[in-house]
Amino acid sequence: MKKTVAIILAGVLAVSGIFANGGQDKKAKDNIDIVILCKSMGNGFFDACFKGSQEAAAEIGGINTTYMAPTQTTAEGQIEIIESLIAQHVDGIAISANDADALIPVTQKAMKAGIKVVSFDSGINVGGRIYDLMPSGSELIGRQQIQLAAELTGSKGSVAVLSASAQATNQNEWIKWMKEEIKDKKYSNMKLVEVTYGDDAPDKSYREANSLMEKYPDLACIICPTTVGLLATAQAVKDAGKSGKIQVTGLGLPSEMKGYILDGTCQKMALWNPIDLGYTSTYLLKALIKGEVKGQDGDRIPAGRMGTEMVQKDGIIFMSTPYVFDKTNIEEYAKIF
Image (cartoon, rainbow, N blue to C red; front, side, top):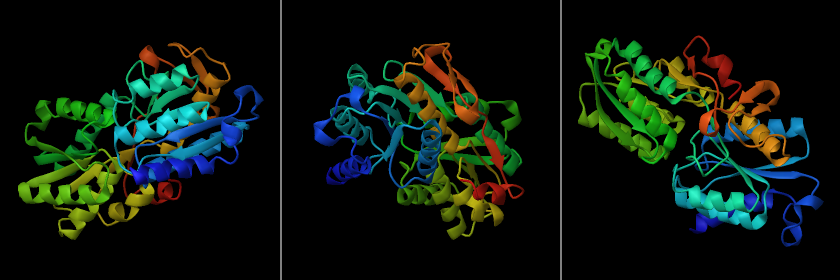
């Protein structure tokens, strides 16, 4: 609890002068105040998301953007932060949710208080946000993970998934589609033996990866649809002397995974650009706060270099298909994010 409060206070102090005098009349403020609320601190993916928000804020002008997250990957930690932001009268919050449903009561409270709420990367269900910005279609992401594992293993052997938390909206959707993809007869010699969770904590993810290797001596591949899990798993496989014997793939940051891709521990992985997620989320909030869109299905929202985003059914906005990284391109992209 003390750590979470410390994060909240740090985030509040980072917004220079915004909430002085006990919270001021929004009409009197010169700038829009938004918060990028992520799953947890110390995650390079979300650091990159915030860089994108800062880029968009600089382009638009008149926006103060702040990065906040609980110390642990929990809905409770995010709820506590949102409660504090309601009291502080921020204008908008973009949230990567630790739980699709648990946040709904507090985000509804925020919206009733006049705060515009969108979710990104890991969504909040309908009723708890206005828009949900998805990095790609869940089906495309999930199926691609099995396809990558099949490429690396020759479509043979036992495969395990090391995910983030069991409540993570996006992870569960992707895993659902992984299970659907592997039913195809072309994967008849592959078997998904277990789904385990590292809670996006490096140490726990590392332990879970080692546990999988011990439990399944014939393990051919570990799929990690989480940047934290992929990094920890690659290190665990390398430390076990099984690089190239147990394939590692998933969703990873090029800057973090460069060494493991170059040494063959992780031959292929995929990811969308997290900078674009934070960038686009900021444009969505700006359009809602300024009343440029109605927050309805069918809205068309200009989003700077990302072009125009189309809002589909239930407030969903889809971005691009994950890009595949390997030895041929990893060094180029590692310089970017």
